[in-house]
Image 1 (spheres, rainbow, N blue to C red):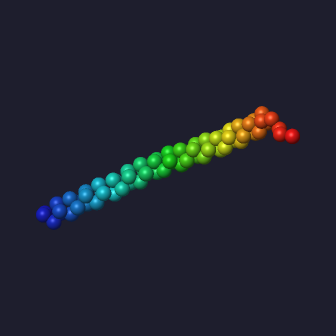
Image 2: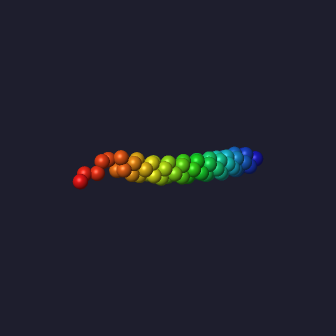
Length: 68
C-alpha cells in the first residue's frame, strides 16, 4: 500500500512538471510572436524614418541657393 501511494505521488509530480512545461512553452510562443511583431513594426518605422530623412535632405538641397 505504501509503495502504491509513493508511486501515485511521484506520478502526480511528474504530471505537474509536464503540465508546467507545456504552459511555459505556450507562454514563450506567445511572447515570441509578440516580439516578432514588435520587430516588424520597428523595422517598418525605421524604413519610414529613412524615407523621411531623404525627403528632408532633398528639400534642403533644393531650397539652398546655387553658387555661381
